[in-house]
Image 1: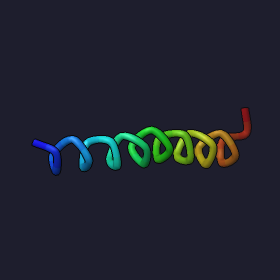
Image 2: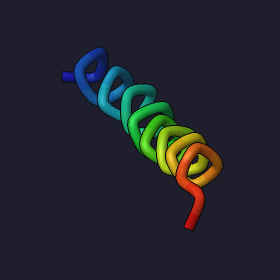
Image 3: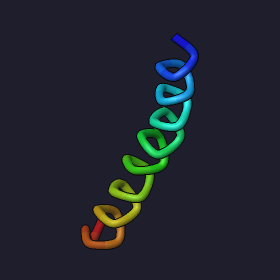
Image 4: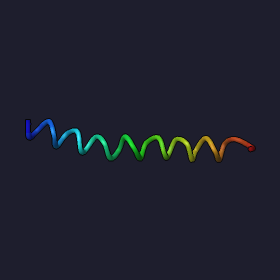
Length: 32
């Protein structure tokens, strides 16, 4: 269980940062 929890936490950070980076890239690519 400990390993699973550690993996979830580690995955939660990048998962939240990934969409933020994608949104920023899309916003910059879009003319609006």
